[in-house]
Amino acid sequence: MTILHDDAEAALWQRAMQREGDAFAQLFDLHQNRVFSRAVGLTENAHDAEDVTAAAFFELWRKRRSVRVVDGSVLPWLLVTTVNLARNRRRSTMRYEKLLRAAPRHECVEGPDAESIETRRRLTESLARLAPVDGALFVLTSVEGYPITEAAEALGLRPATARVRLHRARARLRTELHDLDPRLRFAEGTSR
Amino acid sequence: MTSPTLEPRFASAVRDELTAIGTRSSLLERRQRRSRLLTAGAIAVGVVAATTGAGLVAATAPGSTTVAPSGDAVTVTRTGTSTIELGPRNGANAVILDVTCVSDHGAISVPTSGGLSFDADGTTAASPGTTEWDCAETTAVVHIPTGYAADGSASITVTADPGTEWEATARWGVSTTSDWGVNSEGQTYGEPNALRGYPDLVPVRASNGRDGFAYSKDFIRPHSCGDSLPVYAVNGTTVVGEFPFGEPSGPGCAPGGAKPSGAASGVTTG
Image (cartoon, rainbow over all chains, first blue to last red; front, side, top):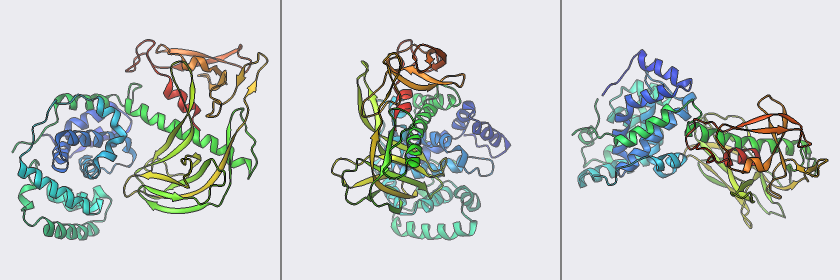
């Protein structure tokens, strides 16, 4: 999986900001796997994860003027958006319902194992109880492995504020998910 | 464990849609243009309403709908989807709202009346719609003169993304629609409206910038992509320009198969 943290992606984003479709398509090529992996971990099935992934990239276009670029990359913004879209999948993807309904799909989807479903459900429910910004902060740092300073930048927070919020969010999740050993399970499906 | 990957055909469909951004075949951008047209329609009526003064109705274009306030204004600040209670209705038929984003992102949607739909044979009907916008793109006050409250209801619900904060001033209003004009040929002209449907001639701006009229039957009939409609002076015979209609390269733009409803409802929705 290619991750560009350099001028190449920043240049792509500059082109995308000018409504160059090809640049959006290349950003999709770069980041679709990371976004989909995250969506799979936060939704009930692969179809929902597909919807959230597509919606995250459509939102990248729609909100292009307010996207926060971190270290030249839009990936942190995409991941934050994925977390937020997954919180309320039905409502958040409704905007793109027509497009999503027209897209080709697998006839049937291979189901994950029961333990994985349970882990996912518990994590999703716990994240939903956090403030949206805290949930996104947790996913970016503890699951995706971003340094706190970059996660804070993606969310428009001061690093000190982000640290305090993350500390509280982690403490809360640790209490709620103490039986799951989140450290190990959250690492599944991520590449960092 | 290997990372999950998107189903290739689904990924390809999403990629194609992203690639189309910036072209006329982009469904994403087409959808946004339609939303903006709907909002622009509401704002256009709003400007008329704002300049009429309380209780006075002085339409600027024949067939325009104007809304006069009737009742006390309620001002609220809310987050996410929320219902505004408006008090006794007293014969009002519209809700006048001024909505402002407090948050710098998130979508807001307000139900509106005054839209029109039409079927293949040109029969028109009033059709409730929505005015929607995104706080990341619109920070100014959005004035909605024809908010929709169901019969018997004393409230209106503003739909917003969770966590999106907004302010609104809302009050009941009475909407009135003026008569269409009639030209020397006996043809009606002016704004389509939910009360009477379409006049013979509807106002359009030609590609050369001149304002004129197009025959509404030309809007309603199926057209070939790449077609242009003639734009006439108010007499319905003097051609002053043309109105491009559809792009030959666009998807779903098979000859004779494109639907004019997006453009027409954008023009007509108040």
